[in-house]
Length: 357
Image (cartoon, rainbow, N blue to C red; front, side, top):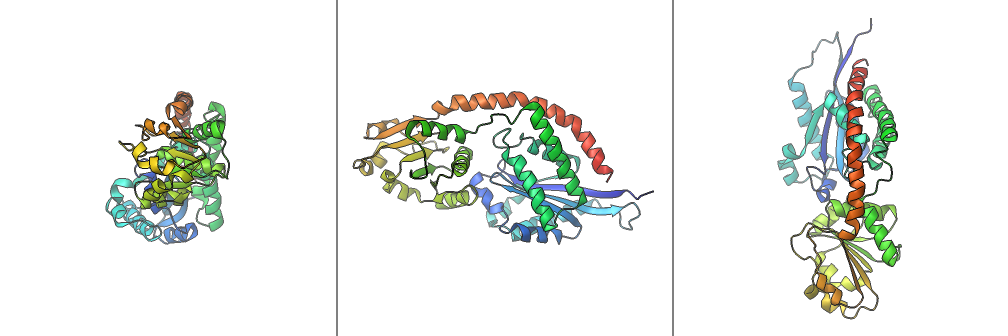
């Protein structure tokens, strides 16, 4: 009779739920292959897969791998020891700053075994995405598995887990249609801009903001291959944001001084004051000959309505895209319970299959 293999599957993650998007780039691994090598060197870690996107950095490991007849039984303190070593390895292979290290215990989520399987299923089905149902995270999971196989970082346990989850998620997505006609706020916003003034790579586009709404816009701009500049309260925020979502970072003071240079300005902030008002831009905009479209996606509004007094300014507000976006989101939300029901049935089967390895 074959000896039964024992192991722990761990997942350590930092996501948009705990860290602002403009800060997530600091947690990303500068060299993914070097990170794989470093994590595999941790005593007790046998396999590793890293998922790294604009909204999350996640590490999956297999540790404490042993057979029934192993001389060293797994110790309860082993998980804590490995997690501490994972934190140290993470710090050494990313651009984490001291403030991140000081709050690592609050931002880092750690799960084991069945909780990992549940999370990975939810993630692959699009339930834990910034935009529910979006295909992107599913594609990233597939890519992460392929990359880890190429690097030799994963093995039979994580390969089986990820292959099983990918197969299940594909079936669940098809049967529930949770991915059908999914659109983000960025998709709808840029469609509206295209209808109003046209949108191509020749237009000078500015994005103000580095939060979730701005991230959705940046992703869609990237998909459409539209160059853009991005600004925020500080240049550090803009720079961090641009490292994971594209765009050229710009000082906000320079934006105000060169406001007339942009054809399209998208404002997506959470500021409780007017980021753009008449007094700030009227002098620089007086001589502008061509029009400027400004779309304010902020809640509350961050653009003063009186700027429409200036010649050539066309101002649109979030209300003009919100109805379509909210309708699409509501449709996805209605499908979520059906997806969760299937996952709850599949989870025990997946767990049992992992125990048979």
